[in-house]
Length: 429
Image 1: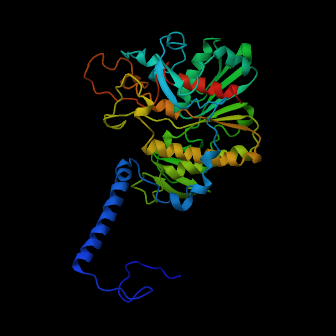
Image 2 (image 1 turned 135 degrees about the vertical axis):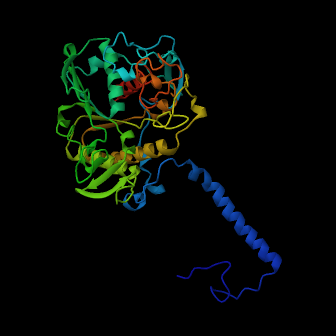
Image 3 (image 1 turned 180 degrees about the vertical axis):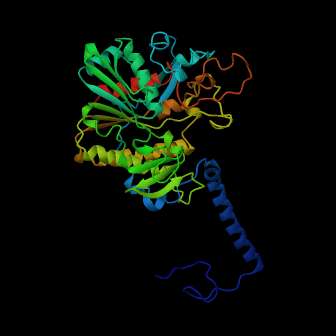
């Protein structure tokens, strides 16, 4: 097929030979082309400068994104009982939280902001208000009555554990549970509510797929080794013992890692000293999520799967490792901020892989629901421990330089709303 060029070189192309251009016409043509290039640059520049993390170099080749005619995210129903509870704003809530660090002894120290001396306590006095409906506060007694005789597991990373502890503290206001298992480092802990015969577990699986930071596969300790096609053995064998599972992950994928498929290295993320192809964590995260959903389908799981979305951080004035902090004391308004950059990329990957799984709904018998906490979390820069992840960090020097935690959440606080959202989904199954 012949390509037709409006301005073909002399002697090429179809049709009559074009006449010679005058100097004025030539300058006009050049100016037009300059304008096109400048216009393109103006359009692309925001995307270029906004990139905070490298694009996976082989993402397009290995896992092409959906085309416009194959937008699987349209399969996702974000309404719960007829309302989108995920989009809204935070409004004042004078009653405060359902528990405190004195009424719940189960909070880990690095999330116990009151104990550690945080001077402002306003972060505990906000309530989530969806734009077009109401989200009921978490009713711990009603929840325990619904799940009596059942077994739940939160499976994921330290954010999953953060949510688990919030959940546990709320339930403990109704009945103090018995600890039936602890691995000694609080990564895997099991609790039992005797009156309701209800078990609640936290299972440590920061990538959801098989991983190790120890020396292995010929690579030194300190860099993660991820088998993207193998589900983590910390939760795979026990899957069928749970009636409900809450899956979440994401932030750990930013760590330097080497990736394996079928026990062969396929690339890495941030490994400049290794002779490997940089494929990036976006590629790894997409493949890992696909592995997890494939496993759930092939295992013929018959319970309920809650898939919680990505958790944004709120570091300002730097990163976590070079002075970044989070000093805000009130929430953002939804009209003033939106998802962008890496957070948006990870969220998009989640929605696409979740949507692809929904499209396969005839292949599985479990119930799959999204718990889309990302939007409410984005609006809470005030909800993190900041420097108060440690006990009284400024007791000896009010100007001390302290590493901030702007990723995890103070308890009680904003993360308690995730439980209200989760229960609302549960009651509308």
